[in-house]
Image (cartoon, rainbow, N blue to C red; front, side):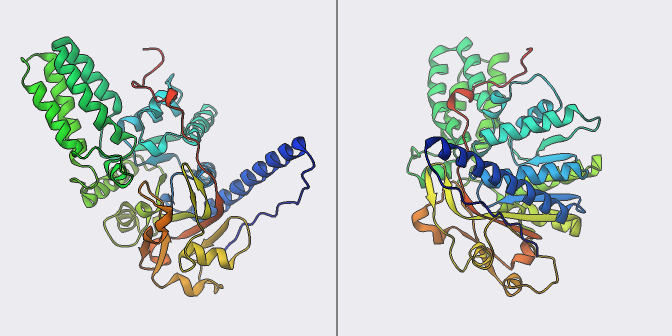
Length: 411
């Protein structure tokens, strides 16, 4: 077991200028804590071929910071690929950007899966681009998600339809205005928050396709129908509609493993903790462990309490993994190497069933006890766990940067 703790000096706040100085100092110290923790984590898993960095929430600034600092340290130790579970077309644009292409990154992020649309993600991709400018062996970015439908596709389809039949274009555009929101917040999340309109989005997509099928044939109509076929398939695979978790996770693992076998490069995977967990099952991490054995390292990054956009998060359940680790540790980021045979004060927790909190888009702080993932044991699921006592919210990109069409600046 290893622990990284932060000891912050006590400073009296005498006036507004002093208070501002203290806030900046604390922010700097927090960043230093995360950098040290990232270096510590990387030293524990750098022998692996694939490292899964799983976060218990994608909406925490500190957890993303820990992912980024660990990734930077692993890159310095020879890792050359960052993998994300996002749209493959977005991943291709990420990759071009970090390798120096003249690409509008804000436009690309506007097409990304909602949780990646943050200033933290923009800064991380910017660092990778600057890093690659100094290297002859650039770090690549790949996306291993299944869908290739982008929000921009809806806009393009309506543009083409407007050439053929304005009333149809208008009606399809109205349907698209509803279903395109699933790229920001999934249907299951909208239902949980009471914002879903009621009709499954796949039905609205099929209605749009039927409207286009009624038009006279031609190249523009055929192109729109190809887009609509993909859009229908995308919404047919929505969680709560026809989502096949086993198929999607298996496919994502296959894409990642195929890239690794083809290139021989070592990979850092950014995902949620439930996806990277290595215990037997249908999730991505289970397939990686089955294929790579101990050459896959699963890291669980979690937290105590704090805030994410729109809500405060309470202390974790005392009988949860993070609750137990925080109760037994000092302040600061606490890191536990679960593979260590050394007896520790937390050893009795590691080989028995446990629970860990997962804060997804459907999380309700008033029903915190409902949002815990059951683990066969921490050691079965993860190789290393890191707990950040307090988190703050990520910073979403402003609506002004979420443009309809991503692109290269020179086009």
